[in-house]
Image (tube, one colour):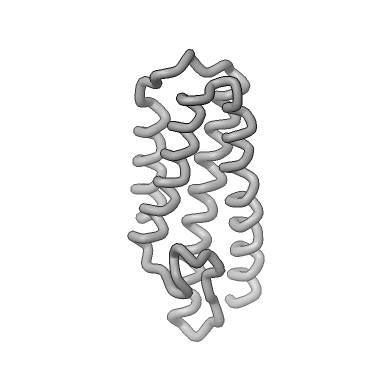
Length: 122
């Protein structure tokens, strides 16, 4: 359910009118990939904390979230990441692709790492 809320928040951010020039088709796809990666990371992080509560050994490595973040903090953080990347892309439209890539890669890697870890813990 929390992943659904996160997706809804991120879609609302995506549809907001920007102050910079309109995104190109490629930039829109990169932004969508960033939303997907951050949503997947949030979902797998929340799932890992639930596995941890059943006797797993999960510890979040992001110092901003703490070792055992709750779902609300994870969602707020991920929505903030996407929001900051979107705003930076509006302020510096010539650097959008790099900004969106920077917002996508770490979350995509973390989501894959969390997923593999969660599968081992089941």
